[in-house]
Length: 293
Ligand SMILES: Cc1cc2nc3c(=O)[nH]c(=O)nc-3n(C[C@H](O)[C@H](O)[C@H](O)COP(=O)(O)OP(=O)(O)OC[C@H]3O[C@@H](n4cnc5c(N)ncnc54)[C@H](O)[C@@H]3O)c2cc1C
Image 1 (cartoon, rainbow, N blue to C red):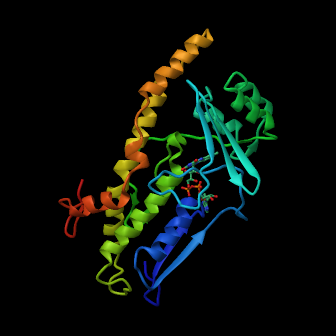
Image 2: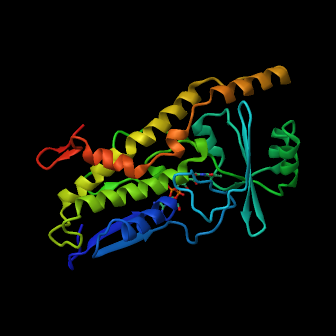
C-alpha cells in the first residue's frame, strides 16, 4: 500500500534470513524507488545461536567458510563445521519418536540440551565423530518440523510468505537458508517485472499490480519448495528401521546411500531461469480474471 507521500510501504515480519534478504533484495534488485521498508522482529536482540548455515552452490557466497564434516547414518546424521573466530559447531540430527505435539510441549527452541545424550547417541560412529562429540562442551535443542506444501503463498492481495514461513521442511538437505535467499530474490524479480514501467509510483503502486507480482512470485517458488516438501513427507512416511546387529545397520546405511534422492535439482536450481520460464509461460495471471490455476 502507498502512504500519503505516494511511497510503497513494505512491512516485513521477522529479521531472519528471509526477512533480511527480502529487505536487501527489494532495495537492490527490484529497481523500485520510493519504497519505505519496515522490518519488525520479535526478538529484543539479534545474536548468534551457535548453529552453522551451509548454503547450496547456487547461492554460495564466495567468502563463506566451507570447511565442514558430514556423516550419515541409517537414521541419524552428524555434521561439524568451523564457524570462524575459533568457534565450531557440531550438529547431531536425530529422529524423535514422539509425536510433533509431544515434542513441541517438551522442547522449546534453543533449550539447553544434554551433551551426554549427543555423546551416547554417536558413540559407535566413526572415531572422528565420536571425538568431536567428546570435544563438544554443551548442546542446544532446535526442534524441527516438516509441513505439507501450502496451497498458496499469497494471502489476500498484499501479503505473501518467504522462507520457513512458506515451506517448513524439517531441515532436510540443509536447504532452508538457501531457499529463503532464493525466495527473496524471486520476489524482488517479480516486483521488478511488474513495476518496470513505473518503478517509483505513485500511480504504479496499485493493489492489483502488487497482487500480480505476488502471484508471479508464488508461481516461481511454490512448486520448487513443494517438490522438496513432498520428498521429505515421503521419507517420513517410511518406517524408522530398527536393527539387531551392526552388520544390519551397515547394510541399511549402504542401501540408504545408494538410493538417496539426487538433490542436484535443489542445490543447482537457477531461480532466475525459473522466473523467466514463468514469465514466458501462458501466464499465471490475467488482468481481468486474476490468478490462473
Ligand atoms: C541447528 C540448525 C542448523 C541449520 N543448518 C542449516 C544449513 O546448514 N543450511 C541451511 O540452508 N539451513 C539450515 N538451517 C535452516 C535455516 O536456519 C532456516 O531455514 C532459515 O533460518 C529460515 O530463515 P527464515 O528467515 O525463514 O526464518 P527464521 O530464521 O526462523 O527467522 C524468522 C524470524 O522471525 C521472527 N518472528 C517470528 N514471529 C514473529 C512475529 N510475530 N513478529 C516479529 N518477528 C517474528 C523470529 O524471531 C525470527 O527472527 C538450520 C536450522 C537449524 C535450527
